[in-house]
Image 1 (cartoon, helix red, strand yellow):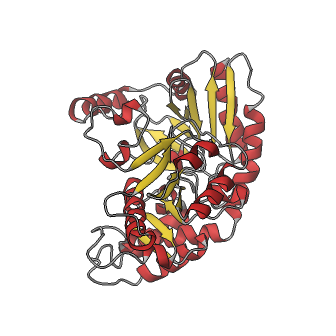
Image 2 (cartoon, rainbow, N blue to C red; image 1 turned 90 degrees about the vertical axis):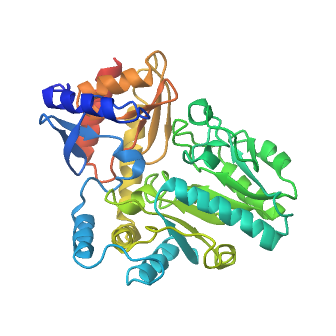
Length: 402
């Protein structure tokens, strides 16, 4: 059955169009139920989810272990002020720090909040530890970046849609070409406190940097006394076939920025994970969040960490990812310009077809994906997807582009 919008979906879409800000351009699909790798719309049509909410649903919709963890915590306590402690907080911080090989955790809610926290951390560390003159700290970022949409973050975006019309912009950032170590080296002076990078640029179209780039960033940061901040909000927690995408080059950053999959697709939770020296610059009252590190989010995140600790999901992502990329490379060259990515994460760039049109054709064949930057679509199925479902989804993509 073709995945076309039915009468109930059309009614609900019209309501949303009339009463919600038009900051998204969704496909004509209105979801009401979901389980594993599949979702069902309000008219009973089932779709294979090949996006997984940009990695927020790495473990599939409503994973039984994660739902059970949420239900257990819902029966106890869901929120307390950070003016008090709760019994999930300490274990969550310890377990996430251990997973990342770090010492300290600063929890927030959304990925953008975590990036903002990393920026504040780097600046404060620069003034207190490195000795940069107050107000002169610089953070180096890369073109094509996507770290969120707050006013500070869009100040260093190179995407006109994210940036234009939202000035005046926050100073203190320097942009260099992604993958260019020579340009990065030239940008590092005595006022630079950090380099902020995505190990793989997701929004830009799942761009994998040249071999040796992450290692080069690490070496330059070490040589210049600069913090290396790895934004692994989309690439981390199993998506690329390893716990963190930085592992592909045996690189350990000074700071991980995590989010999305950490909440198990149930609640938002994000975190900055780093050393005691770096996160130790904060004192009470200098940063915080009402909901950051709340009991419900911590309980679910602890279950996510426990699931990752076995290595099962990373291994599954690596194995199925190899299969995914092998099949994508067989797509007709007359239709597909490039296929890139790692693990269960791929960007497919078309020669003539727009990404939006490709996603519309896929939705008509009951597969959900997302376009980006004109001619590219992103594929990021849940790590729990079966090989049969993955093959079926790729079959629909092949049919759609032909």
